Image (tube, rainbow, N blue to C red; front, side, top):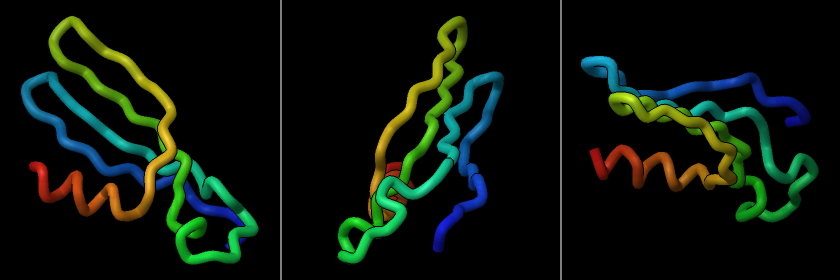
Length: 70
């Protein structure tokens, strides 16, 4: 897999939101299974007057943890 289409998950309610957009693989030519699970993401948060975005490197396992924490 050389290229990854953007993929976004998020929660939105009453003007507040959090979304995580996967923007690519961290290690394009990864050979180990561990390295293949790392993703480059952009996280966006809107909470009242506060809003922001930041880039984060997450593993595919982090999405399951995020789901469990909801």
